[in-house]
Amino acid sequence: MAPKKVLLLCGDYMEDYEAMVPFQALQAYGVSVDAACPGKKAGDSCRTAVHQGIGHQKGERKGEYTESHNGTGKTYVQLGLFLRAHNEMTDFLTYAESRGHNFALNASFDEVNINEYDGLVIPGGRAPEYLAMDEKVLDLVRKFSDAKKPIASVCHGQLILAAAGVVQNRKCTAYPAVKPVLVAAGAKWEEADTMDKCTVDGNLVTAVAYDAHPEFISLFVKALGGSVTGSNKRILFLCGDYMEDYEVMVPFQSLQALGCHVDAVCPDKGAGEKCPTAIHDFEGDQTYSEKPGHDFALTASFDNVDASSYDALVIPGGRAPEYLALNDKVISLVKGFMDKAKPVASICHGQQILSAAGVLQGRKCTAYPAVKLNVVLGGATWLEPNPIDRCFTDGNLVTGAAWPGHPEFISQLMALLGIKVSF
Image (cartoon, rainbow, N blue to C red; front, side, top):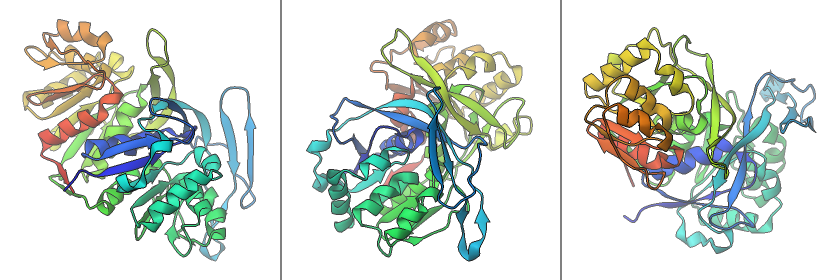
């Protein structure tokens, strides 16, 4: 069967995770993904937004929507409380917005031919507000719907579905603020009890927010005719404050979407606590820029983790590895995985930890170019990351240079674990 090909419908200030996680996860599974935005061409970029609830005020009237800009580059939105069935009230904290990564497009919208694609993915964020007013966008969505090709839409993306008139008598969920629009468009609203809820109705997959990505992506893969084997694996993520935002969430949710059990731990923190992340981007400066990223929720306690129960270890990059490399418990954990020849996948600055642990002697690996010194002094043979998305496997060790390499990084780890996606 020919490889599957899907279209990612992009726009400025789409939610950062909601664009990049499905984009790179699907590529890691062997799906070709084109990202296109109206008015832009391949090679152009879309700005993205980091949306997350951080305890701001809740509205008191159904459907209240106000917006203010406080001069800090952040947007604060107040969304109301939303009625559930039988007038039960559910509180959803509003979200805050800050600048995310710059997302590089790889296709030109005006050259998109629906006949070349097997499915459509629509991220949320603020982009859908204006994309829903673009007749070319609506016509595109209608064509996918009429052809009964899989459509996966998350969060505010369902505004576009409603504007295109493709949700009549269809079961849908979405971010709660989108409920009034979907109901008015004739959809059968599925209440969001949690932020990870998904709904399927025929060729239509809808989700509340990026928390739902594992199921959302899994359902979309299934709708494309995909099946997964070998995913009964347990994988541990070694986290720290200011690890790179993409470098933790993209592989974390990509592996969850395959059906793996994935835990994330951080020294001196327990399950349910959070690590702040850093957005490292390439914006024309001599080195990468940094902005605040999402807060990442840990799933297990570092002190209670039984490393022997896991099949693989993943080490994100960012700034966290600088201080994690000084932690004796972290070094012991990493040595344990390497001594047992279990798969270890490390990206970007994560190799600072591998070097400090003394496990690179005689190995071949890459890393972010600025980490070359650590790698060479650690006794490894340096493999040039040219281009920057190049990744390498040496025995049980997978290394990558930066988050643009995630598709290859994740697929090489999948190969070591014996996980396959077939269509």
